[in-house]
Image (tube, rainbow, N blue to C red; front, side, top):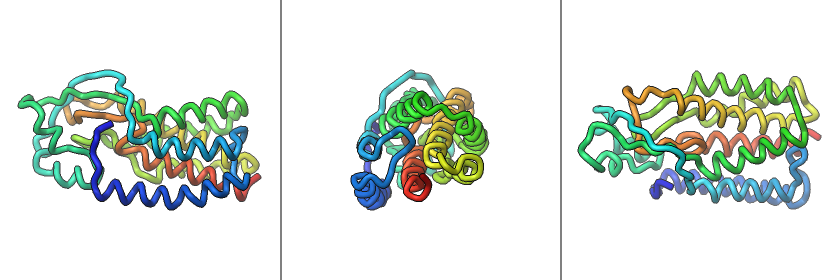
Length: 231
């Protein structure tokens, strides 16, 4: 957890809560599900992801470069991504970050477990094929932003939606979730492991957290609502 909240983050969470409440009501009425994930379990997952988004599990520590231009743009980045960039820059006088790579509980651990469960209980080669498309998209469109970590477009998981409707309309909801969320997380991991530490860096790089949680949660919500229309 990076321990930082600003007005931008509050607005984002408020928007997610406004979407989550009616979605939870639909789960309670058993209108929504994701394959073998029942409506009640889905409702728990949606709440747990939002609550767990503030928690990080440290994995490894490395060193990465502090970009010189980051000192100028730090306040702007801090406001956009709700990350304490200015504070991170002020720690130590070295020109490198002591970078902690972590995994976000709400944006990585919980959705990854749900994805694995679906793949084990409802094997689907189509979902894996579409996931590969999302992985490639994440690898191409992700960007390592100094002081923030890996940043991906919020809409990127929705790439799986039209493919799911075309090739597996009867399972479009679960396929969209598996391909979208699984693709984002896999692409996220690949990008984090292969980024150029000498070019740019951050004090924290989160898998499923800052820079990618919105994309993962949005994909989960859309896939859940899709199950209302596709059975």
